[in-house]
Image 1 (tube, rainbow, N blue to C red):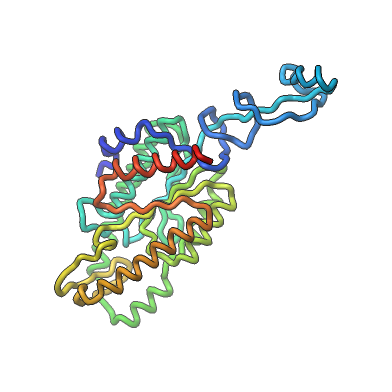
Image 2: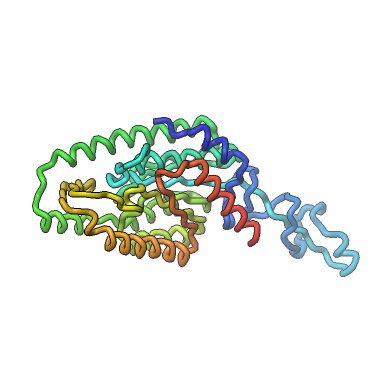
Length: 321
């Protein structure tokens, strides 16, 4: 699977991906830093102390006040972009040309491509119930192939896990639901470990279907924000999950557990859509409360248009702040 779609890269190549909050870094780039250095952006004055470079003294202030003050400037720095991609089995579902996992990987790879073009460092973390694999942030163009190769390997593993799940003996509904409650994904631990593993403040992009316990998710988001990271929550769902347009007797096969349910989806549709609306609203409100950007992506929409629209809107909002 080639996650670099030419039309997507063409559409987003002129957009800038900037961190909304202050970031750390060590290379000269185009993102604001908490450190002071040499730049055209003036920050503040401070009183001169012996050992300061005389060239940094503001002699105009000295002429007016007969006191020595040093000018401090903002130092521009690079962005550290961490791509967190969900590899849980529910991501293998797809009713359109791409599964949720393929769409999520294409989305993450496109953002990585854009960031490296801006001389920013990109790393990748794959997670399900916990953090599974981590690649540290680097700025080399060739590093994107390392990241996408990892995604391709994980896609093959994911397919195999789903195939094995389908071949398992299926138990009764009550016992399976009890097993599911014990193994329910909270994401809190995965996001906590991800936050602790990232060496500096930066931009964290989480790409998932977020079919998980929301309390654990929001707790994990708070942990990331508490560590100073800017967080983007990119929610990937399939058309069938969003529209529920199935008709006639249907068998639903579980991806996380060996479970099958037969029913008439037309009877369930109204209740399902009501629950879906409440769930999506909970996601939006929870992300907003935790100062995280939230965006829903449906897998049938061309990714280049969806991503370009989102980044343009994000950049416009940042300019007004």
